[in-house]
Length: 315
Image (cartoon, rainbow, N blue to C red; front, top):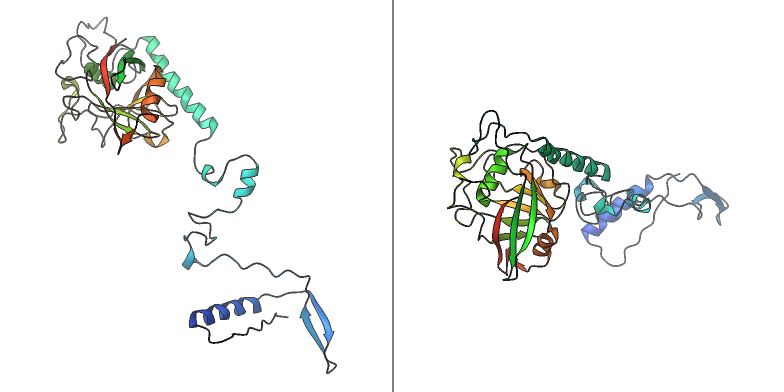
């Protein structure tokens, strides 16, 4: 039989407390408890009372009116979802690590694809539909260099070299624009370039951002297209992923708006895939990049020390 709850209010209860008690009473009365104990009262009649050994079921989760509030138990953001402790004991990490982060197998697959793209440089593939290189002929097209370097000085110290490997066979336009601004290809522009520029921003846990010192919002003239936003060029392709630290990518404020700005990542950047065109990776000098990204003090992303690209070019 339904379990009856007798409540006593000492003094005058507020309307909110009265409504809460009525809701609680209605819920308990609707809970059927099969185990009962028969007792005999002073009149001689028997009365069924709930057994003290029976456990009353816990109150269910809060209604949708409280869904989403921290501590409501509704499984919303800000609360621990069901089964998190079991997953934690299985070695799958805490609740904050059980989201949609890519697993080890997915990251390995992306890294293998990156290696495949960079290995195409060894086949000597010529640039696809790109501007003609100086000295190139139809029989023997000039292949873009597959490497570049940046000599970076931190707060006036001796410059240290960061060597890059570039995906020249797959992304000739993006790599060609980068090499033109590095001054590593003969006959390219001299008024623009990364030589003498400073690291403009350091995004913690993301990477360091570098742009042309003369005109950061413009690419090399021979790769520029007619755009309403300035001298930019199109996204050539998202063949490389940010599955490892040290990837070199263009910084684009929108679709097909690449200019001179690029970033060297210091972490895995899944959120950058499909947004920034990655075209290279660091093969030597990653310690220099990590020192800039983690040890140089910044104020709202701007380094407090002068981090300067003293020299740059192709390899």
